[in-house]
Amino acid sequence: MKRLVVVFIGLLLLATGCTTAERPEDKVQRFLTKVEKSPYQYVYQEQTKGLKVEVRGRVEDTIRHTESLFVDGAKVMERIVRDDLMAVQVSAPDLVPDLNAAQPPDMAVANVLRSGQWVIDPAGAPTLETNIEVERASVGQDPLVDAAEIFQYMRLSIQQGAGVALFNPDALEYRHQEDPFPQPKKTIGEERYDLLRLPLPTRAGGQLPGAGPFRKMSFYLVGGKLVRVLEKIDLEGHEDFVRAQQTRRNRFHLELMRDLREGRGPEQIRNREMAFQILSQGEEVTIDPPLEGFSGNLSVLFARKKQQAAQTPPQLPEGVTNPLQPSPAAEG
Amino acid sequence: MSRRRIAALLIVLMPVLAATACRGAEERAAAAPGPVSVDVPTQILGLAVIQENVTGQVIPFKNRSYLDTFGLFSMRDGELLRATLQVGRFGQVAEEGSETFRRQIIGLMGTSSPREIRVGEETVWTSTASQQSVFAWFQGRGFFVLTVHKEFAFELTLLRKLMSLEQEF
Image (cartoon, rainbow over all chains, first blue to last red; front, side, top):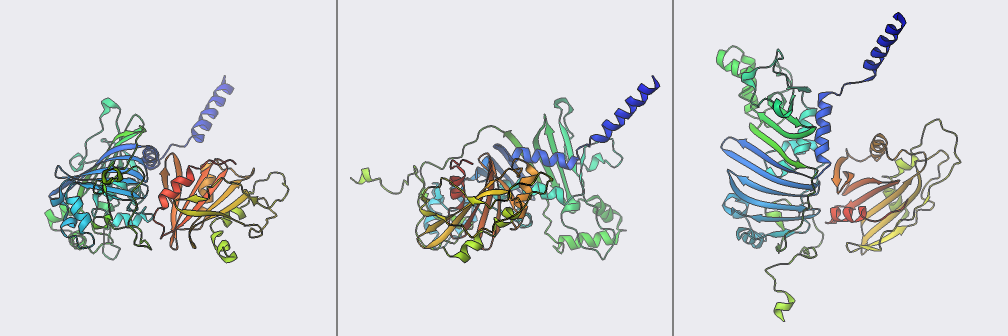
């Protein structure tokens, strides 16, 4: 009996030693990858001071996707990206300043966009950015890019954070009053994983921090799938800065906040609330170009990715007609 | 195509040719990679496709190599070289189905940190080199590297068309 007990304990020790628990950040990365490797539909929302932006997207793969842009609830434009082709239709031209600022030779395209028709640029698709640092620096400049590159952004945020942890409201360091996000819904088996923030520097002389200490990000999983990601970046709302302002005792933190507000850190910290909700994943998505459109250069709205050697007008893809050009049958 | 040009284009794939399996398997007969037979059309997106003669350009290796066949296709717009497609077939010592092996091969390419994207159901690694975009993917035992000059406007359309070609390895 004694020998049997010893063998059993030995096997138990061996079993626990052989299994390695998956780190929370690896688990989150795995679920991010799972969404990226399949077609999916999503809603991306960003709230900054005075402006709410929403992008509703459908993704077939990395280079075939479509987005609808809403600003403060009003639809502004729709964009289709299909390999090298990009097509845009503008619904609210007054909300697109670039159209009003258009100069020749972009005037014809700008006028078509203002009329609400599709403009198709066979070579106008945005560049595939391979430099993640460049992407991070440009967040906020173009919500369509921010939505399309959201997974790169989330991955970099995890890399530059202090780790990921499973949400635990009973943890000693958890402060309910400082938690901007809803608790996971246990009734549906929802799990929440929180990005751990980098600490603020505690004394002068070191490098100024970027957005890391001010970013709260949480990943929600249900049934083995990522369903939404919430983020809040709040420079002035950091609890250490709030305390410093209330007590006026921590001069270092007050000066640090001032320096970061004035943009002296490695990146401009942009306060915002972001929500990324995945509506479906794995279901077939097909991105087709619009059936009719005006062929034109969309650099009036988006920087063209290639400098073409010849100034030949781009050719419409097969099967797409141009309503502004009469068909041979009509001319005959 | 000049010999110097061919040599420059082979830089991307040469590390893969040079990589050797270091497992303690029995010694295999040394064999230099031979020419690959790939069904690429003679015209694609207005570019003339020519299979380049790389015989003699590839240094035969006495050790085991991951690739046992290799081919190079140039795609031209008139006299202007717009893209190249380098094709290799993994030999028996390669573990082409292994994710770790694939990442190691991609890491050998020597370009800037490649980004992983999805084209259809396939994974493609993309990066940039001087004045060109580089795309690499695996299909069965095949390994493909597409380089496209930045002046060619339809690199992604070209990529998808080449990925859809039927290949037998």
